[in-house]
Length: 315
Ligand code: NAD
Image 1 (cartoon, rainbow, N blue to C red):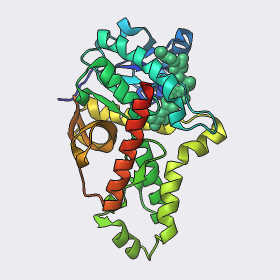
Image 2 (image 1 turned 30 degrees about the vertical axis):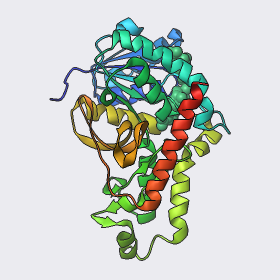
Image 3 (image 1 turned 90 degrees about the vertical axis):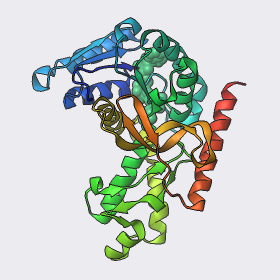
Image 4 (image 1 turned 120 degrees about the horizontal axis):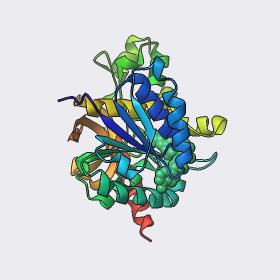
């Protein structure tokens, strides 16, 4: 059953958190948004700036608050943490952000025990695991935005190559949201055709280098944006708002999200992105589509990178 009067809290009202709030208000998806930030003045300022557009949007109450104010939220989106500076990888943020999200998780455990937690802070797969293990919430209710944005970038780049609407291209970037992610070419479909068939029909449009170029352009997109404007926030805000909508409407949509594996492809107790059915209570089902041997190897490599990063935090 879809929620009609939904309350969403966003922890971290920086570039990403405030842009998610703006996107949600614009879409009219939720009735109340709480912005929580250690810099309360920032949260207040962002809420004021967004609410001043309310005569032009569907009305929704947005305000700054603390964890008590967040109580009763249907979804809590965690964006608190430092972002990448030019030249930094997502993994470079791990120690600083693990301390931040651990603190956030302890607060959420007390005041939002029934919420679905959507983690965006990077490195998102590890941060999602830290939050799930700190709160002890069921893994179904703690998910990371994972490669949903990367997959959107991938579909966008393919849409430019093929000259068709990106919404008609199905394809996933899987594994880590980071340097070990990979394009699951064996699952790309355009109007029911696999990528090779589609390429042939479009006049042999995909040459050998195109596969490499498109996968690399997807993987390096965040670096390219950060080098130019120091942060990325519009794309991730669209992705997080879409995930939020799918949860609140109990859509059972399939998205590549960072979820805790329990045996998929022989992997368990690790968070990484696989196509996932999501609904009102979070994860409904984690899907295991066919992957080529090479792709499965890349998935296992991602899992190893993420497991080592998580273990490194304990040292
Ligand atoms: P930002 O610096 O603009 O905002 C971070 C905010 O978190 C700041 O306002 C800060 O005051 C707040 N904060 C810090 N510690 C806090 C705490 N303990 N409690 C509450 N708030 C706290 O950074 P940003 O550009 O908004 O990025 C936020 C995070 O999102 C980064 O980790 C970034 O890498 C990540 N990100 C993820 C994706 C993705 O696809 N998953 C995409 C873009 C950015």
